[in-house]
Image (cartoon, rainbow, N blue to C red):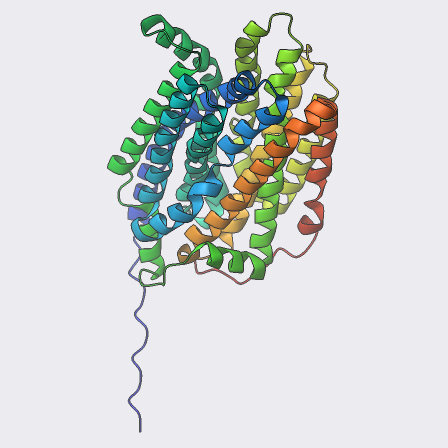
Length: 431
């Protein structure tokens, strides 16, 4: 007769009031870091295309800088997931912003050396700031009630508006201040500003994001002893779970379209101006509006996700992306009215895809599965961004900006077979 096995340990008692108070502190901290990080990302987006075009003289390489900046997560996501598994969100987010600081140093050195190759390599690492900003939306959802998950993560997406809208315009200010004080080549001031902002953001995360929301969610769900997972585990989860798979595809295609169009918009604007030297100011305003579209409507989108579910929001986001490509692609380079409208629609469509997919993925997995699965999703997003940037330059150089927008509209429609299929999977353990 064998001894009876003891029952598994029950998860710790949940204190709803304490969890709610902690979640509010988490949201406040993430809100601040998104403002600071958004400033850094906004500056990087504004100057990237112009910097690489001046260094190479070719639009083919211009999209590369933008794709590397937004797709830099493809480099950092694997170690970031391992760090998050061990140290929680604090470690993973701080690692991302730290990588971006190193990237700014490399780009600044490349500018002084006149090396386009080194500059593009630095931009790849600098793109870790974009990865950290995207991962913050998942940190906001770790302790969120299921009925308000979309609203909480969308609040952090919205917080990026403040920094990102001001970021492109701040690029010009940073350049004037730096050259006025120290002189030297153009764009070094922008790199210094990005580096300082990322450094400050990492410091805020390490000091104030306590207790860690992911580790706390695992304690609540009784998964503190769950085995650590990797990106490969995230792939297996997406393969087995239709909801996760659809969320990953929607996020990746939305990101592809946004980056593909946005990467070449600065060059499109510059080619339509009589005085190319004034391009940075115009690009800053128009891209600022676009980035505002990416983030400003996120709270509304989050509430729609909570009320109606992710599928209708993702369908609406796809329609907005197609409309954005139509408006932007039909806009002359000197049309500073219609082009911004297209870029705002592009931003809102991206926001719907990003918020909807994040809520869909997070709601379909347990806290123990989150870093690996969410990291896999952002890895695919990063690879999609890189592919979009690599394709956008040659398309514009050998065809046109309009053809680029038509191509991106076709890509956006590829998500529909997934959205019309089954979106249910294994029920996750409540956080």
